[in-house]
Length: 318
Ligand SMILES: [Zn+2]
Image 1 (cartoon, protein in one colour):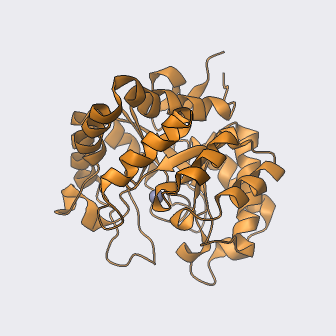
Image 2 (cartoon, rainbow, N blue to C red; image 1 turned 90 degrees about the vertical axis):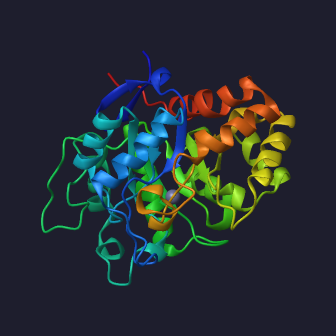
């Protein structure tokens, strides 16, 4: 049976994902990014139309619960642009949720029910912020979790338990925000103890800590390395990511690299008058990647690896 990936327009055979931006955000708002929220459907449709023109065919939106997900509007955007979109459920690192947020108080079973509902019935149209659930017809296809800088907070550990349970029950991969690429081994240890194999885990933001030796270790455990600061010149030039890919590939682990744009602020979107914009991956980075390492490596990281992430999670569904 072919593994199916749940997109906002329904299940898609994993080999039809095409070229994938494995870490993006189409709608986002967070109290730690005041003034940087983006919630406008028409603006984002324009942005994603550019992504389509840049040659990217699928976008994995890693926005978790309570940070501005708009499932029905995302489905319309996908229909209008032709770009396939996978949405997430799960809980981000604690910094994104102010003290007193219900996520700190809720019991494990209730939270698991929220995640499983998002994955199997439909994402709550009110993003679990309303007085009662309002399931959309749009299901999530991946679990997103978050870890703090060099440690896991007690609340994050609990959300890991629930997220891992949802991921294994529903056969979907787990993406984890690492803060500046730290605690990656600890994240894999924690998830492994909870029954999630490293081959079903994407470690986001690893390129914030561009340490090839560490990345080779993580890849050797079977984890996927999320390089998702493409175009984020304030962190480092793209040349750093290009060199990192070369080093990890030379060590035999090109098959574990995933690329993303992770545009998480209004000011980074072309549609809102900023930059570099979500199309930076296809338009600027991929040509450099191809020039440096050739077509086969581009196909590996943009097409084959996302397929393997979803296959590694055993997401076989009827
Ligand atoms: Zn992100």
